[in-house]
Length: 584
Image (cartoon, rainbow, N blue to C red; front, top):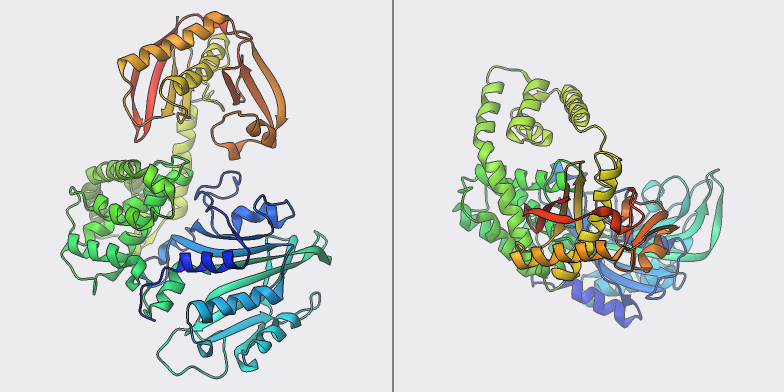
């Protein structure tokens, strides 16, 4: 059991043999779910289909899914916690149910992965006043040779529902005895030596908002198995970071730091985990860059925490240490995730730029932290905000450093100062609203229409992969950010300008209509941040050269715009260029 395991391939092959269709891993940044920053579980992208929408691949599905959770971020550094992880899953959408699901789970574990059945145990739903004991699952496990002493009946840990109402049902969890001790005859779920490796959820009921539970006419199965945990088990290691998944990355960190893994485990694990996660976020096609909000804030926080732990290991922060580690991660995963190949250079640029930015102030910030905590009993709000505002320390980094000194932080006071800072920033940029306009007058309306023409022209001149990344409009000029991997040549700038002016001269009508978001996307309408739009959207078309979801005002005809002139083309961030232009 110490061999290197290619778990993803074994899993997909097994379920494809059982008539499942492999579906692609959904993006790490959800496309149509603004309720979360990242996909947090294998089943999350499948919720519409588990709710009844037909899936184009059919009723039996399987995949490996990229997932990211930050709720356990402070736990990273031990043997088991990760921010990014991969989840294996197989689903039945109204097809097979408990019998096949349980049979295949055990068959995969024992026949394919060669896990001795005597090291396995399971839990089943014990039942309550509303929903009965899951006798079908219990009897199925017995029939497959799992002894009654190894089947625990629990209530709170063996029932699944997403929220307060909706599809729900019992689940059965499979545990592996991860210890060198003799395997106990009787399974105790509270014994930490038993580690959960697989969860089969049976959605057979519907709970309405009043608490009434009824049987679903169409029942679903949703299963999940963590790649990192299962790989460590199969390879016989009690530290996930000692498995083949992490071996090359940890070895490289050790080589760069010129230190052994032993006695430096925490910092090396944090660097390994956080850089792997940062690689996947920055490679995602959503184009996330480090920032102070949303996904960008998580990315910045991860990179900066990795940098601080690299400093703990006395790594030369000005070297290319982060790229060396990222290269190993990309090489390891690029066979499975195309975005790592497509955006490899973007990843290196993101890591390098954030490193340079943070390195400038890290040393000063650490000195400031040491000075502020020398004779203090806690870190006050002013110090915490000063570390954030002046030295770029996320509050979580200050909290982590304070914890190492057994000191408290005035978080409430920090948040009050942060809110005050936001209000000042908001006042300074008063009048801005969606679409990047700073006003709503005649000239701003013209500029806003011109951004649509510029977007369309760049797609012709530079390529169809150009997408808008942001815009800002005043009565003086327009600023337009777009995805592009190179500085525009003088010829490209000239052609873009010429194309926009030709469309202006053609006198193209600007039309508007409302339609469901799904229809708009099918019709070819483009937009930024699709998840932020409601189900019914406004679509603006300019002749047949531009169609975009948009909320801003527009002119009626392109002749109203005058002459378009590009004043400047520059870099905005890695993989994003910026054009400043005027209408004359």
